[in-house]
Length: 333
Image (cartoon, rainbow, N blue to C red; front, side, top):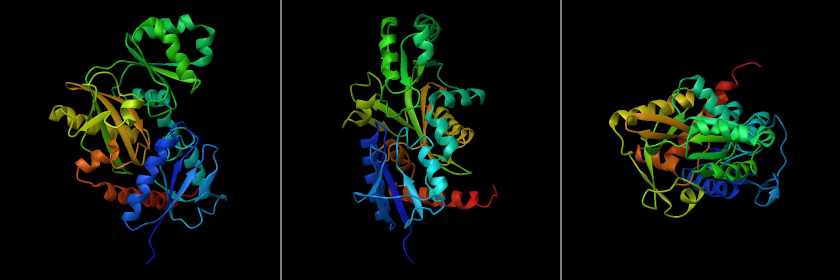
């Protein structure tokens, strides 16, 4: 029996291109070790798909010739936001991870937070700021944001890996922080600071998702500062403590909310949900539908600590992708 043929997509047009390449290389190596027939497809910053340096062409309805399933290890816009997922749907091929709607929804921090607010899921206070509104009346925007207190965190609404984020500790810093966010997106989100520990929890599954043990993010600089791009991707910038140093009740609440948030947003395959935990208070912060995927990344590390080694995790994700594709093709449109 021939090995299942998996195409690993990596790279992409976003600022997270290099992070995606590292994730993709790790996934490709893990799947190869698991016995799959793996080919690496790099999506360039120009948006062109290449396999071993050669351009490849795609034709709707024909799948991805030579492959049975796609693992899109893409982070950020033009990869994690439903665009590539829509293309894969048009090709009619199984793929790992969330579908079009869930990918788009969770990539947009404002829509994500609006949805979970309607679902009564506890979260950090926030406000959305559109560039046209800010340009028209910056003083009015500043007055509205004052209700969040200080410090606050200003972020592009549809970007990841802590790119374009600024911590604002004083009113005079707000304008520069918003301008930084607007360099990346016309929509910014401003979040109130949350006390407590930064805790993350991984989820896998389709109809019956399961959560990992929660892990605690500890920064390298004696736990000061915040979890920015440098802390995430610099060697030794952070360490992960599993299980998180929180009460048993808070730990189970994190796992419960991770699964609930996964389901409410319509996710499938996998996700990582980020929290702030202060005593027994657990607040959801974000959900990432395609988190970093090296063997030392938080997503895989949490499941490794929960009894599912990295290679086994990849196998499960490919199986979930095939199951979802088969189930969805039972319906007539």
